[in-house]
Image 1 (spheres, each protein chain N blue to C red):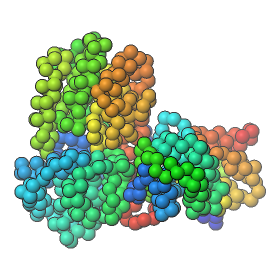
Image 2 (cartoon, helix red, strand yellow; image 1 turned 120 degrees about the vertical axis):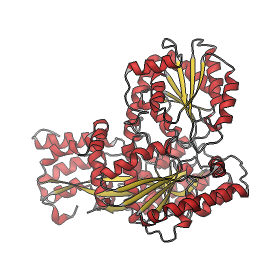
Image 3 (cartoon, rainbow over the protein chains, first blue to last red; image 1 turned 180 degrees about the vertical axis):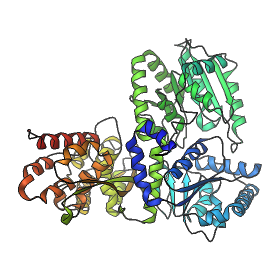
Image 4 (cartoon, rainbow over the protein chains, first blue to last red; image 1 turned 135 degrees about the vertical axis):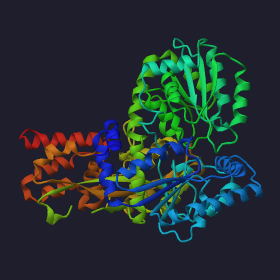
Length: 413
Length: 223
């Protein structure tokens, strides 16, 4: 067995890896290309970073390509992202033209590779226009939507649907996100990589060093939310919840740690809003971390007593699984993929308001045993459901499934 | 399993992937309307697919329709009636569909409110696609089951013990099918296998139950 697979077997158990090997047998040599718009930052890049080499070790020929564009392209795709999440955004013709031009220009570079691939996975709206520029494609093209598209702003969806409908299949993270389309819509939740810097075991010394670096008092309770500075992540609501809880627990500390992503131009505005709301409270630590500050994020999550993900809209919210993997209870917004991870009274609590979050913070900090039990359960739940190996298994299953059209039971020989 | 190859048991494994059908219901009338039209694969999935999903609580209802009616529509009586449907007794999935529809229609006829009362969360009709592959493990004699069952993955148990019911005559499973190839020799063991109710156990519990049964039987103990 090769080394990367061996490393995963140590975490998941050898049976999980054997299962992947057997499933991948019929796909040996299959050419697979993943395309997204950022190499660093955000959950998609983190997944692809390991998914591609791991599937190569299983005998597939997988590569990962990244498209790029100008400022207007990213403005357009950020608006598309917000529109898919239900924001009433207006995207003017100039931005759409920039989007289309960027896809055309990237297609010029990638056309040969994409046209020859057996499977092309296009992640999110940014590269969705590539398909139209590859008329001689021979493989199956799959649009992978990582966004909560359950109630998209209709004009934005109408524009995207024209492109997406031409794909052979799409993937959504939850059934509720799926939209009427003319092809099969697979349901695959995303995953975390337990061996990445963001999730790997850290020494207590390293956690303590990060605590010291950000002036966090190890003797006082700590709340942590890790996410981009994005309105849907509700950083302002998190500060409100912290304030409400702090009336009862004056020693409380809060960290809002946001990593920027190169395709998110709105982050600065939301960061400023959060700083204004924090109003120089010395116990509120707003940290704008570099996109590659994975070990710092890891240490902050491990330093936390409770992890929050109080999103009002969420594609999936991998930070929840990251926290569960570190045996932390999670207080999450009752939305999207967070519902799949936070199971009330088992792995944490689902909340709707800052008041609700504050109530659960107070409860957990008074019920330390309960908090520990939830942490243990959360880690096992993450191990069974949200690790990269499960994600890869479902991609392999999908590829086999797509080759066999609508059959329910596909017997491989 | 093919009957003529009953000399050995080929251990298979499977991976299930979920596909959205695009059909959704926000009240009971919509559930009925969609049930009339949805592919039988979706009905099958909502009866059995849940077994492949790890969960903390034991399954309260053994089909998703009953669970949704109880928790999202808050209709406990209807939920209990839907939960009483035994897919093992039904001739095929089409018969299960008819049984579901009859019970729901009756409820709709009795209550005007049931037509429009909105659910707390919508019901999403899903279906599955099952990829079955060979583990290349072969059992040469029934006594091997005692040693090999604990080594099988839970998805392998799903394929041989649950999914088999829709492939085999009389809702049998692959183990019983193999054992009946030996004539009457294992009739009593087959009866014990038939008595295992797979509905209210997780797959790992079912594996444990099977392992204990085979172990006790082939050790000459009382299973």
